[in-house]
Image (cartoon, rainbow, N blue to C red; front, top):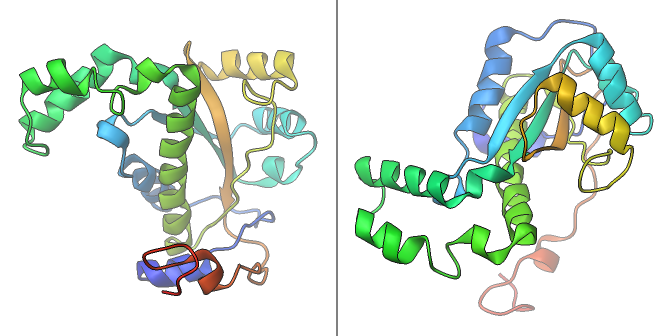
Length: 223
């Protein structure tokens, strides 16, 4: 299946067959997330595969009753690592990019410009910018995962409505889940991806007209 076909076939799947996911197919979905583009190659993510029935029930409670999370063969918790933006860590990945000849820079440019620039030094813009960039990066990653899930014959749904640091809801339950899952300080669960073999074939959701969301040169000028 080519990428265009997979994108057009994407549907949010909330009903799954009671069958185990092929290990190779699941690994391919996770690999798609790992290979997603990342700002300065920071890769502020961790993909945690949850298959334990008891933990999935806790995720149902955390999402205020999204029962399909428990019925999915697996749920991928997409975790954002806010500490990935700390300057020593960013410096390390930038130097790795230089060693790989992926960017035309030097160690001096990294230290004197890239780690100090108002645009590039994300952590200097404060916690809200760090969180925004983390959401951005994770969104790219699970977008890649969604397309690969279709390619592998799997169904998936992207769930973002649950208790965590962002919503401030169900704090005690959430903190207990984080502890049980072994999340480190600075790591947040920012999306849940129930995944399995589709047990439904929903029709396409309506989308805005092409010319409503695309312009050329200036907003309002048709492409």
